[in-house]
Image 1: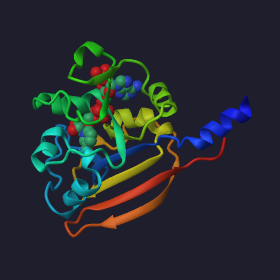
Image 2: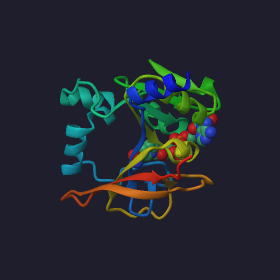
Image 3: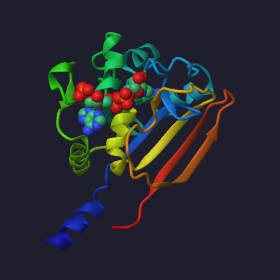
Length: 206
Ligand SMILES: NC(=O)c1ccc[n+]([C@@H]2O[C@H](COP(=O)([O-])OP(=O)(O)OC[C@H]3O[C@@H](n4cnc5c(N)ncnc54)[C@H](OP(=O)(O)O)[C@@H]3O)[C@@H](O)[C@H]2O)c1
């Protein structure tokens, strides 16, 4: 039975969880008011998102750009309730209708939207179960609190580093975490001053 299970997991590629997120040089994903409009929203780094990560754009932006294909990296997005709230407050209770959209909250009555999967249980256990299901890449949209909880299951980071200092705000990872060392796997500079830095955690086997 064990041999059979090992063969099965080798045949099926494991789903991975990637924290693909915009961040300031001093490590904040939003300012103290929860806004991120200090990050430049035009330029070649945005063109790269459109070309390479179109599934991470909100539904209305995709419609405007005529993007309706499948995701290139992800078929699922995970959001903490406060991240979801940003879209909901702008009239977008499901900003990513083209993806399986999972929102974590401890007050499930507070979250609703067409096609949303609202999860009140432990995010870590839920992600471990998701990874066991067939499917594509899983995008951790944010925010910092959810990232801290999910850190043991994050397989990769793509940090869109913006040439901006915020001083204070929402940290990239917000919580007590046994932080793994990171290995840089890619680095890319855009003429707009934005850099994309990719990392993966260095975990000891077992
Ligand atoms: N720059 C970017 O690319 C980017 C991307 C995403 C988000 N953001 C920003 O990030 C901010 C939100 O981040 P955040 O760190 O404040 O919140 P968050 O991680 O988005 O959401 C935290 C919420 O998730 C729910 N939750 C359920 N179980 C949890 C657990 N075990 N641990 C932690 N949270 C759990 C709770 O919702 P309840 O309170 O409902 O129980 C908690 O309050 C927003 O300002 C947004 O603009 C920026």
